[in-house]
Length: 228
Image (cartoon, rainbow, N blue to C red; front, top):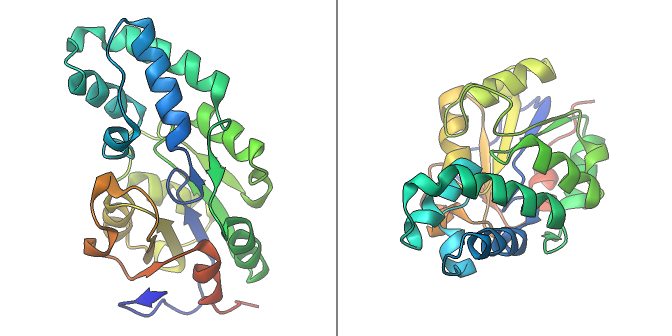
């Protein structure tokens, strides 16, 4: 655990990202995307390339993959429909919960924090994934990238999630794995911790402006004082 700035006292809630923060979903992405590409008679893509494209929502992912394999952008609608079909079939089957996630969520709850999952992943992908991994019961709310008018790194999703939680941004911790999470948190006025093992578009996460960095969600929870 490495803090640059101390966390404020009296935190009331935490907003947790999903892909790269709670669940390593790179296997799911690779399988669904390559099924999509095969259906469109396009070349396969390697997981190492996908990792740099993840985090800005499925629409951005699909457009980036099409560009990567040299496909015409006009294929987007067909690709998007194919991707959704294949992803829903394999959702969670090629992914794994990171070490310390369940323990960290339990500890955050025990410290008196309300929890929300906020991801740029579509809501109808996120909710079944959390359920499949046994993580859905920890969260009061789950908001996907289609839940609001804009996605992270825009601050709007964090602001709306704070409203749903009934907490102020200054008392709501954002935990994520990328610059998207950090930029959204900074703009919304939330303290932010980034985990060191996620995706972050293929860039070193410690180069992102954040209040601290953690090697596991359990480490995050250990640094928060109970509010009751």
